[in-house]
Image (cartoon, rainbow, N blue to C red; front, side, top):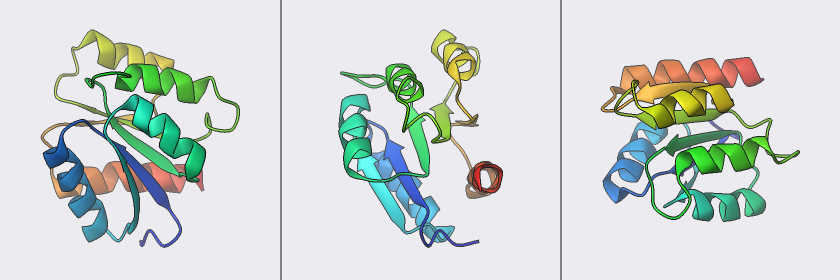
Length: 128
């Protein structure tokens, strides 16, 4: 399945993680990728680009991933966008709150290309 008109927003303060996510998504056929370094940058990007999926870290400076998720869920035209949470720890309180707030799914870090494929394709197939 290719990502021909499917736009993914990657939100992570780690340049390495953004690069890894971009490479993995590109390898999977998703070539429309927007990057943001934190939740504030992501909100700006969401106002400029139509996005079909948000993949976001939770622990970031300025506006963290949970605050970003809440902002997305409270915005009438953004709340339809599936939100995939990146987390190293499923026992983290912020992770539990993100899932309760409306995240579509989560991806444990570190992750494999296969794990990401399953999560992204499941979200894409569910939102079509």
